[in-house]
Figure (cartoon, protein in one colour):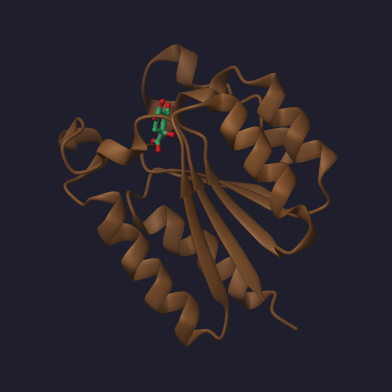
Length: 143
Ligand code: DQA
């Protein structure tokens, strides 16, 4: 089983970015924990982060032939990127939408996700553990 974790804009600054909302853990440390858990579960895992919408669209396209699950935190693009929504709909791989923060308990513009309807499901509000839950779901589907 091959899993790809994609993080969008500003998530490279985790650890220093608004720690009261997003926590103190860096993306590098989150990814290291996910790698360990995935490997223990017998899956291989890759990581990609970009601040650019088109790069994320390209990554969704290019992973479509060799990936079983995508875990995606699209950052603010979640709320307005029809291009990412269409890319998710275009590929056959299940995509799990994750957010560190509870997007429903924040500013009004964060309440709407334009990608949720084309994702397998959404996990939000559990900090870095949101990624862990998404990973555990993917691992539970291993044949
Ligand atoms: C986020 C929530 C988004 O609204 C925000 O723009 C982010 C991070 C989260 O993980 O909580 O960049 O996706």
